[in-house]
Length: 142
Ligand SMILES: CC(C)(COP(=O)(O)OP(=O)(O)OC[C@H]1O[C@@H](n2cnc3c(N)ncnc32)[C@H](O)[C@@H]1OP(=O)(O)O)[C@@H](O)C(=O)NCCC(=O)NCCS
Image 1 (tube, rainbow, N blue to C red):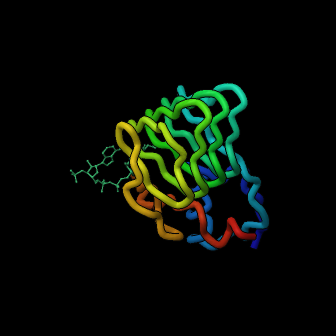
Image 2: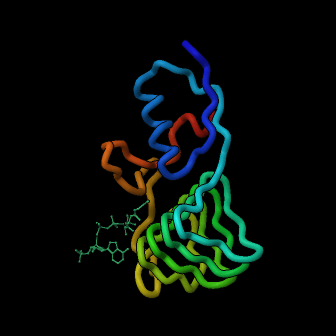
């Protein structure tokens, strides 16, 4: 079995990792953590994107915003200056985030409110290919 190294670990890169693990033809020797700032999304001055975090298209974040590892901010959400979103948290599409988002929650709305907690391994979205995007399988702990 070939050893491979995967570059990228968030957003749809997660789908590739899931596919490689399912097919079991390659051994994932390592994953180089990255983050994704998708089409027309922006993070302003002094912002921090944690490993494996992601912005979907058209997300805007003001200055000094911190996106913790594995957090996902979905389509068109807006985050005001100085906010942080917690590890493994998900901010839903179209949200306006006015206060810090804790770890492991799903939050959305205008303004964003905590809707529920996220269980370990719970996918944050489903994509057309049928693979679930959850970004916390065994491979990420290697
Ligand atoms: C975060 C998210 C996945 C959570 O969805 P969820 O909690 O599973 O929500 P459901 O689809 O079960 O919907 C539950 C209710 O919340 C509402 N709701 C879901 N997401 C919402 C949002 N972002 N803002 C406001 N209301 C929302 C639904 O309309 C539904 O209302 P109803 O009960 O009156 O019908 C979803 O909010 C989201 O943002 N999806 C966008 C995904 C995206 O950006 N994809 C592109 C990636 S490149």
